[in-house]
Length: 231
Length: 231
DNA sequence: GCATCCGTATTTAGATTCAAAATCTAAACT
DNA sequence: AGTTTAGATTTTGAATCTAAATACGGATGC
Image (cartoon, rainbow over all chains, first blue to last red; front, top):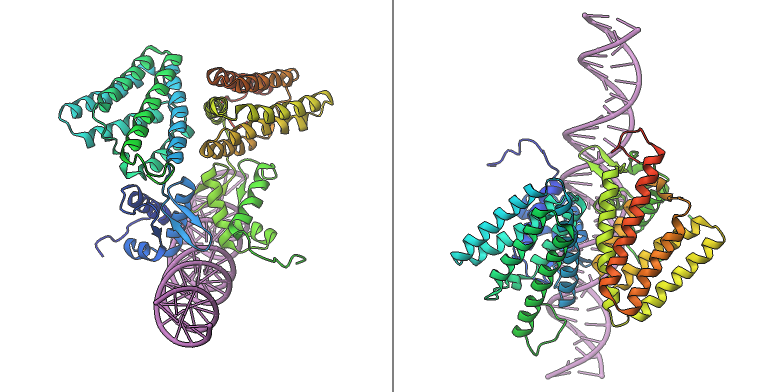
């Protein structure tokens, strides 16, 4: 109709993958809900084959679960899953900060990261919490992209996608944002000076701090609720 | 033929996945070689659909590469890839050792790991280098499985599979094996005592040491060859 | 009134078919 | 003889089709 589909520069599977992934991590599909093929086929004007391939890919990425002969479901993450994800992020940021500090262009990396922190500071002053959160994610995104290890980057993005399944992740804890920005700057300083050990320590400290405040907020919300249920 | 295929307890895709994966990591297919579907279909007595699904899964695992309209290939890892893999293993073992030392059952974990080290010592005395290597891999395998983070375990196994693509990984450096065993025992000691920091430090030291000797051996073998070519 | 059983409908898993893209072969031209 | 190009073959990527398994719903018996 309006799009003549000039050239299939990318495979239809990749197209379906991107569309379905954005639908899931945007929160359109609530956790636990069933993801079936036919509605997606009709919505995206594609055939079933690439859609199914994309669903299988997303299952391997951790943003979908498949049960034999029952289909795909959006996983409901437990607090144990959250703990695992944050632990992995701690290891990844620990390594990424060390690699960035040890790189020959560590000064340039620090400059780019510092720019992200500056944007964070701007949004913080205008109290735009959503934009601040985006910049926070982009900070780690950039750190993974610039540290020079593509496998670390891929793993980090997968964990980020899994984390986005938790819609209550907003983490609008009041005094938390300023502390997060301060911790980011500690990492950047160490990278700028080329101090690998110090950069790694600052990164792990940051993630530990984020996890701690998050678990506190969860405990506050459902104080007497079941401990390992979906959040 | 002789097997009537009693019950499809597992999906045909999983069956094809396991078969193809073992073929690849066993080294039957040399790096750079093309992996086509029809021979696999005939060899495994399956249809094309589950075989292709398995190939796509293996691509996401990192043991296959796919080029649009050109098929799947066994990747030829460069020294840069090896560096990335070892860096990731360093971060993973660092975290796994810390988690194991911090677990409430850290003593039991240490016992199981120490048993693997004892088997290593046995094979070392009988100069069975192949068996020693297997135990070395199983040591890290167990550490990842016992540390209590399933995502860490999955990522570690994927990296292990990628590493197996390098057939020259044998790493039959003479005095290296004793050193490796000593370093393993340092990790186990720290876990047994519940010293997280010390366990993480021992783990990173171990991986750094392994990577160092490996790079030395590579440099020795092809001294004047191109530096970032496949190994 | 409730539980169980059976039939139907939906949905996935797998098989087969179709078409487009790429590689390979070989002939023709320079 | 070397290069280029045209055709044939192979192989992937996608679509359609069939079968199996599960979930749902109503009817029937207790």
